[in-house]
Length: 145
Image 1 (spheres, rainbow, N blue to C red):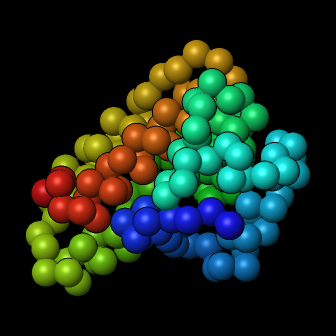
Image 2 (image 1 turned 90 degrees about the horizontal axis):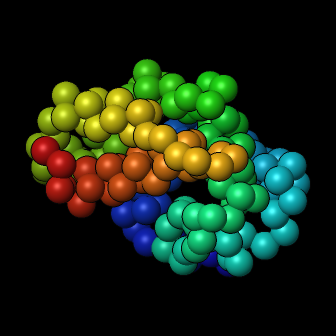
């Protein structure tokens, strides 16, 4: 079983808010099968949804598959509008904790994440994913406001 920190869990839930738990589980299963990933613990860092080794093409493509399934990736490009819409749940969570959030800064960060580049199969989308994860974690931990 993969252990996930509270802030990472909030990030994952917020970035995939449009997905009911059973559909999220089905998406993970689908991507594991389509990418040939038998053991998530062997490729993912404990406490996050990032890869232990970003040179792992299968792992990067697994993340790309998830991004597609969650509706935040269209082709090879991050769908910033969808991510921004889904980030509203993160914003509400942070506000419920009594913290202020600069939504324009979040939108700018999401757009920047969509502009990441990388060499190798699925690297561009993996770089966008890690950027989104870092950004959302910063918002949840109140480092972006």
